[in-house]
Length: 89
Image 1 (cartoon, rainbow, N blue to C red):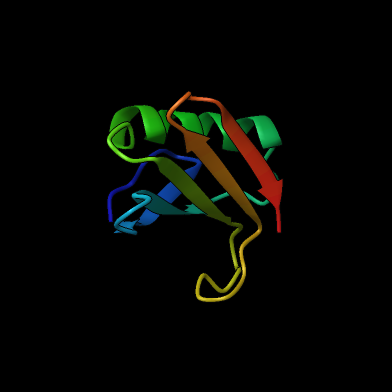
Image 2: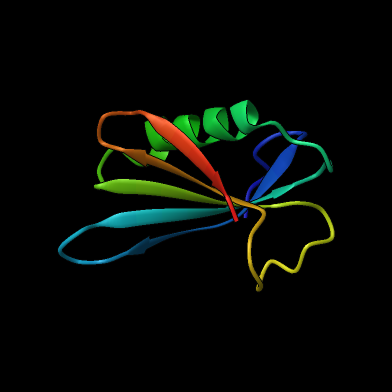
């Protein structure tokens, strides 16, 4: 997809659900060490720019070298209130 920054790349953004509309963005980092705050900020910015029309915006984070078809390093989430949270897989 598009390069998002020097630190990460957006692999895909997809919509899911009908009753509870959700959008998911898959993010591949270009660096090995990423803070929880960085992931919260990315989740919030993507929700702000591309996710305010859905009930939940989810980010799925991968570190370099991880199989992006397998399990993720961490997950971010932002609901309509704009409060971004991150949990680790």
